Length: 193
Image (cartoon, rainbow, N blue to C red):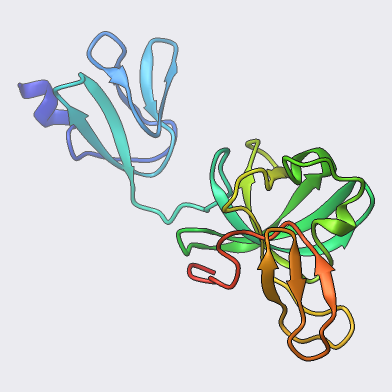
């Protein structure tokens, strides 16, 4: 028990040796280097006796980034026939990122239906809810789930906020313009954005 009390709660910085691999397994925010478990981040060491792991609880605010499998909100900034560029601004849990990240939406990830070009899915200025497919920028995105797609759009003629008619149609209440999109079932719900 003496060794656990010696390392549990100890303050560490990146590169500090916590223990040797024979004592514990590496846990969160640690790495193995030459048989030693070292801190990967500034924080305090904790020991989990049940799993025989040692980890570090960060004492610094971590820089949040989109994660594979996570859901994000973003603004469409460019649309071409086969891809769209989306500026990712937050995750769906309400965490706004310190800076925007670039997301790429390929036409093959825009819908479960056949799509000839992305203009029928998203348009510049739309706010979308998307799922992240990879771990590093630029982040590949998909809209292939019912909750994913456009959650807010504006009329291309008069600029009014469009209302939802169906899963692929929006209508302008001011000028009656009809526009196609891949509309999320959460259209209009900006909670967390």
